[in-house]
Image 1 (tube, rainbow, N blue to C red):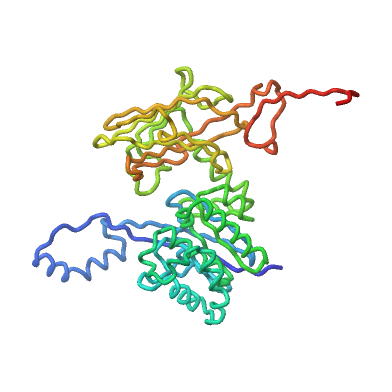
Image 2 (cartoon, rainbow, N blue to C red):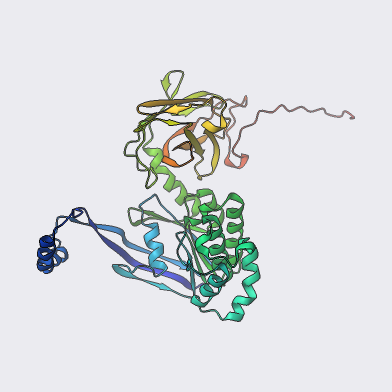
Length: 425
C-alpha cells in the first residue's frame, strides 16, 4: 500500500481585507493614531472594525496524495489554488488545520520567486540544490542536464535579474525537475513558456513521476494538459474542495457551471470569467444566426457574434479574438481580427464589433468560447473565459442519422465509399 506523500487536514486560511485606505495625515493625526493604536488593535481582534473584512481564501480543505501520484488542482480565478500551493510550499501558514509532507519539496510558483536576482544562473542552480539539502557532488552530477534542458548556456553566468520571463521559467523548471525532489509543485507559471517548452515540461513531469516515488501537484487552466498528465484531479471552488476524483468527471464538473449559465446574449460587465486585472471593456456578447438568437448550431451553419465594447478613447488596429474549446478544455479553433483580411481598424466608446463565420463540422457536443481584447501594441485590455457556449446538434450532416461516438474524433468529415466484389484491379 502506497504511503501518503501529502496529507492536507482541514486547512483554512483567513485574510483580513482593509477597505478604508487612510488619506494624507498631519503630524497631530499621527500622534493621535499612536495613542489610539491599542484600542484599534482590540477592535480588530474582536471583529469590531468596520473597515476590515474577513476573507476565507480556504475553508476546511482536506485531501491526501499518495507517493508517485500526479494530481491536478483546478478551479476558477479566486478559488484558492495559489493560497493552497503557498501553504504546501511553506510560504504562508494556514489559519487552522495542518499539512504533513514526506520528502523534499521543489516548488515552481510565480515568476520571480525561488532565485536570487543578483546571482547568476549557475550560482542559483547550486543555491537551490543546497536549499533542497543536496550535496555539491549531487548537483554537479545533474548540472549539465539542467543547463541543457533550460537552453540557457550563453547566459549561464549572467545575473538572473536580466533574464526574460521565458528564460527564468526554463531555468526554474529545469532546476526543480532535475534535483530529485520527492514532491514537485508546479503552478500555472509554465504558461509563460512557448508551446514547445510546455510540451517538453509535460514530458519531464511524466518522466519524474514514472518511477512511482516522486509526486507531482500540477495547477493549470489548460484542461487538456491536466487531462493528459494527471491521474486524479481536485476541484476548488470558493476556497473549498468541490470535487476530487477521476480527471474526466472532475473536469466536466468544472466546465459545467459556465455552460449552465449560458445565454445567446450575455451581459459581461461583471462576468466571473473575466481574467484578474482586466478592466470591464467588453460589455456584452450576442450570438445570432439568420437574425435570431442562437445557442445550438449545426455544422456549416452561419453564425454571427456581436461584441459590445466601451473604451474611454479610440484605439487603432485592435486585436480581438475568440477561442472555442471542447468540454475537455482543448482549443478546437479560433477567430481573430489579425487572421482576417477584413477587420476593424478603429474602435472606441460604444463600439459594436461583429464577426460572421460558418460553424465548422465538429463532433456533436458543447463548445465554450472566450473573448479577448488587446490594443495595437498587443497589451491585453480585457479577457473573458467561458463567455457562453454553443451546442453542436447531431443532425444528418454526414447524410446519416447514425449516432456519433467520442472515439470517432473531434471533426466530422464527409466521405464517399465504394466497393467492387470479385473484380480484379
